[in-house]
Length: 513
Image (cartoon, rainbow, N blue to C red):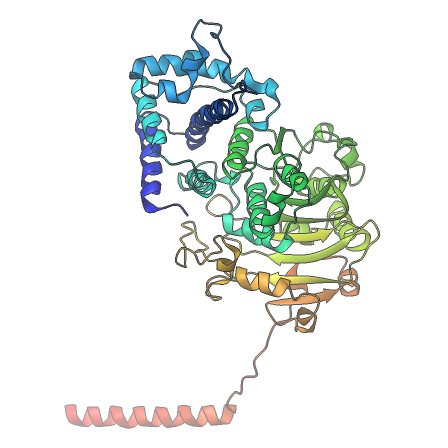
């Protein structure tokens, strides 16, 4: 877990960028990501050198070639360990004129991280700032996987607290809840078609690593974990780099993080029905043009609504038996349009809709006040919905105003390991209860009354309500019996009070007279 000392170091790095003239938080993250990547390249090359020295064999794969770069500088001088102690102006020239041009040539080696470096831009404005940041980053311990991952997560959290680009971040505790409920296994193939900073993929990787430690002792599954299990798509090159680095620092060597406009590109035969799990919070951009939407999506449902098109996409990408946990705006649950009704009918009739979890409207504040829900469904192509489990989350452990201040101490919101997820005050955080009841949805939950916080609704009832999936459509209000006094009794009391007031006034008059 990241300590206060490490947090203060990161805060100082962040402050150095801001005082140095870089105020866009995404740009700060991007430049730090580049520098962390450069540092990692040097560490990998050093490990390769040590292995070669031990075995007496030449280096199998040189990250830094022998000889000079096109501008005549030895590639050895481009390594972090070489330039970190240089004078600021010399360091600035080396990084800007030699290291970054070299980074842009690395895409051909096939790794996810190198691929996204082909358009890397060096925007640190002066030698003094670069020297300060390099010194600070060099002092941050990066040997331990948990420390590296937590440090980067802390950096990403500062995107939100800086008040900009918070739309890229789904609250970490909501992601963790969804992953814990889906419970990915060592053989799953997981996809987020709108991955952003890869928060869902990262949390899924941590869950698999935590719950299935044995897989790292099996070569086939170990390779699957590092190369084939995690897939993410995004069309923003900055977020691709950020997401790739997030996965790298959390210990996944080569996830498939690709540049792709998920709604514009037709699903290829290789991707169709490829994934066993989809975890996503797709952007709700309203409407898009038919001309810019993949025809294989609009043929299923004729709509311009991105939230509906993404649901169609998820069904296309999931293999039969695959599961999805996705965040949708409330309008998907009760919208009266033809496309809204059809996608709900598909989920209920053609596949298996497992759960609808209603989130409080403040979850995404201050960036958006839209009400949302989490849909859990299984692709079957043959139906299977007997009943749908509903849960109304009233509190998620954070204040629901624009401040989003934590209501519980650190460690009570579901931090790793998973046992901590269950420690919470229900009045302030319902998420542990969601997870506990989810495991009972096929037994005890079936017996709950619709007046409770969670309950099940039969498929027949949902069909009778025209496939409306809004929780309030099925929840029953609890009415308390209130006994009222008889009107004549109330009038008698009023008469008595008036008589007392009249006698009181008479006494006051007598005293004054």
